Image (tube, rainbow, N blue to C red; front, side):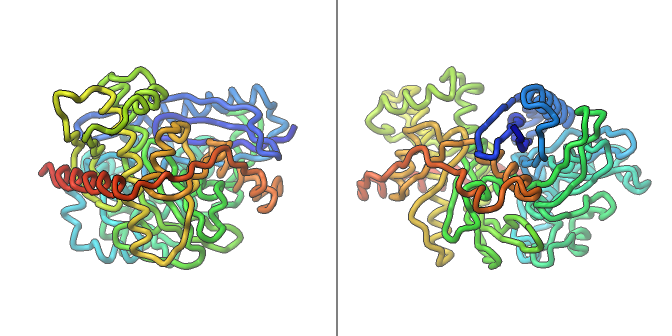
Length: 490
């Protein structure tokens, strides 16, 4: 059976999935890797942990499907995460600085005078979330980096570029517009690296990857690594890949991915709608045509449940959260603002910090768990309301994906809070499926119509509106967010 592979490079782990022409998962493998927190608000990964778990997952899947049956592979990745490495030795100069990391807030403050021009050219707010300030931080804080850049020895990449370069044996240093548009160096109007932006951030053009179309031939895997050359024929940032798999080229399709963070996205086609409190981004570029999207990037989604498990240790597994939340009739007045790494859209407040409010003598761990799940739904509503307020786009249902969507309590609560239908697909590995899709379409394994027909709905959640109650709870949530904001100073 011929298959297309998807390499899904996530924030907490990497997976590889083999898809058949009917969209069936033939084999998959997943490995978590360590999260590194050197200081409060700082998040790092070891780049070799990212690479080695990817290789291991690839080898697992290939041992099941057989390398001769692989038509092509696509890559999708955690975006904005920044790696700089030596092109001669392959050694990173520093750990990967993760998209969640807040260490560059002071750099953003110093460059605040350029906010308007940055937003105009990139569609992005000036925030530590994006890559350029991370590059600047590495250049200013890691010994020898500027000298090595001047010698032409260093390369920058987001995680897609790092994996592509390694899998091709150091032959290909490239990316594509959905990832490039998250760096603060890429002009989404001209679809090129922008000299003025590079000057603002002090980023040398020599370290940047070549930008190719999202659905194009990126090269072959090094036969020494996997035993045979496999064509890599598509790359998309994780949220764009999810939108692609959800049929995001159709008008009015809005999706939310419930992963480490939450990412609400809607395609605007060829129209670039510039909004102040949301991100304007490239969705993809295929066959010379670029599609744009509006995105609300929320930094802490499923990771707040992970924090309850690993940090507070009040649950043993993420799955336990559903049962605990459903054991209560209400949240008991407890609200959790999960600003564990600041707040993203639509607030863009890197100085916000997490807060649990409304605690009384009657508060139990179940209330903490329910408040965490409810915070995921409320943050999603914040972004949906912003899209409604700022555009004339029409939508009546939300297509969802990501591991947290298996929580039926959350999905029903989300439908109630939004007063919208929620549509959960049978295949929740939507991000990986989008990467496989763009790769398979590039090689003719699927055409667009065949690929869209593969998508099947698992469950529909319809709202049970109690408008007065929902409005009251949402207004209390907004008050809690206000109190958590602007908490720290440098």
